[in-house]
Length: 96
Image (cartoon, rainbow, N blue to C red; front, side, top):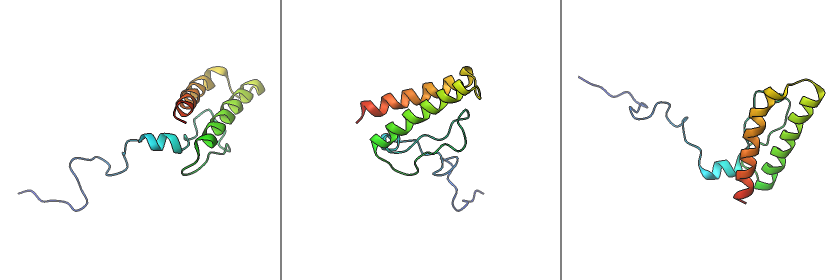
């Protein structure tokens, strides 16, 4: 005999936690901090304007470049995150 657990769905693993990002989310929400970034780096919370997100990503790319020039990070550590930022930056500029 089967019984139903309240609040459980056999079709979703984590309930609403695994929601797929929508286009609106990608255009209005900032990316999380990456491993190679300084934990003190500011990232906008919640929904923000497209222009603010573009400026934020440009600043974060510049900060990663500065950390390579200062010698605190290697270029190999920073390259994957810079690629992610540039990809997202192109997406944001394309969908203004």
